[in-house]
Length: 233
Ligand code: CA
Image 1: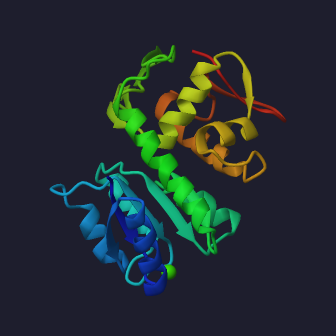
Image 2: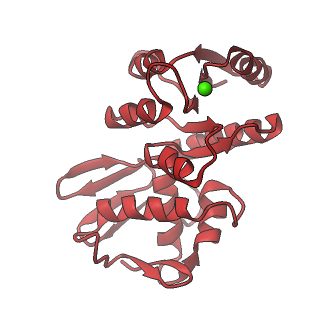
């Protein structure tokens, strides 16, 4: 059983999601505007397992809701669901802290599959992986602890989001090899390889900011022209 917050101002849509998520055994809360969603997310007494977040909301945009949650150190998985299907909005939704993105109108099965994926990943992330994947790696000036989702840098410890950690792990596991954006989209986001490769680029920019001494001249997360990215420790 997971506790899910549905942030959606269209009542029929919110109720439909609640009904279907409850049918899957979850406890569902609804927030109908930005400020009440932000307030609920800031409540440390009642942690959530997942947030389904609309972007166009009364009072405060979903972008702002996500940004505030992340700034406050709340790393609950966020599935952004919005009619804004322009590439820039997809990228921004993910930059502000969304872990996954679904464009309205969506198929219910697709949404439930994404929800399952994010919840499953969250459970995996709580237990040490039993395969040969490294739990921690050190390179340059940072140490990454995949099991704890933490990045130790000279300026302090940083919490990684699910996708940030997943992307870094996907690159580290293939150290030295060039990995295409499409492979990373499939591997980390579970999206089709042709979805929107800018999402990957935008996350790479973030990771470089965290791990590189000079993000403009990366030494660990390298671009491979016309192909994708390559990690070197
Ligand atoms: Ca809306």
